[in-house]
Amino acid sequence: MELQHLLERKQGRRRPRRRKMRPPTPSKRAEVWYRDRLTEFIDGMVQAFVDELGKPTLTDDTDTTPLSITTRLAAVMQRLASISVSEVAARLSAGFVTRANLQNKEQTQRTFFQAFGIDLTGMLGEAAIKPEMEKAVSENVDLITSIHTNFIHDIGAAVFDNMKDGGRHENLIDLIKERGEITRNRARFIARDQTSKLNADLTEARNVALGLDLYEWGGTGDERERDTHFVLNHMLCKYSDPTVYSDDGGKTWKKRSTIGAFIGKPG
Image (tube, rainbow, N blue to C red; front, side, top):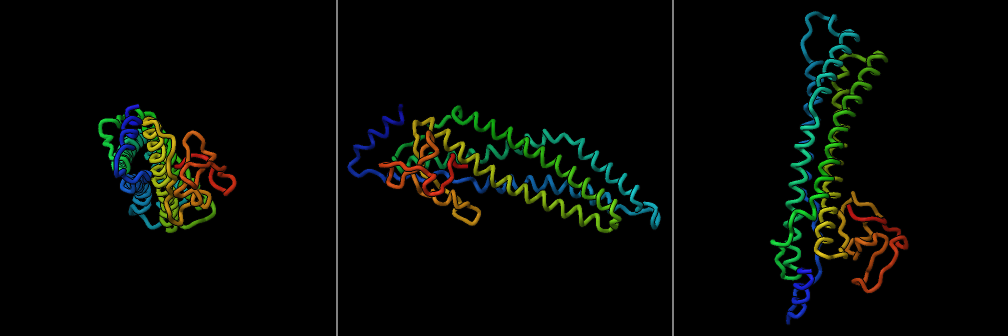
């Protein structure tokens, strides 16, 4: 392979570059962009309910009976359900995947140049990562669609249960905002989780296409990181065998189970 020949030629340097490569990190910019777009999407649905409940009534009490409120909220649910969410989801997913891929590609090029002095600009085509990008778009379309569907169902169940149990009209807006915040928390997790997963998938696809099987495990390094992942940080791992690790630069390989480590690929 062309890359292998380049690496072999670099071995003849009198003053070789440092060979330790840092894995590409998940794109924080892509995560924030995705999180903000999902939040805007959720805010729009929450506001539709709040606006309906906040409309002025024509009389003191006629328009706040349980039946009338239920009818008004049902109309909002029907309107939201009729939105072509697949188009919105496809646009957001494509935007997210494109942004995440851009950073992954730039970091991969920079990493190889710093470690080996090799410019991969002409070697990193999109063919190797196309399946991963298409899969990520499809998965995130499904996730966004589920946010939309689950929110409508969740609001409906919570509001109608509240009315059935004699809840006050004034409490409904707070209830809807509360369910909206729960949905936002899920969106934040989705943005963070999908950014990490996509970065790992793109990194693997690019490295495998370049003929590389080994990689250094790199975690988030914060409180979100699970113990089973933390113990693998800075260890050498194999794409071809996600059950092993090396703590001596690849001289020997040990089972991850012996240190209670995560068995699987990053992401």
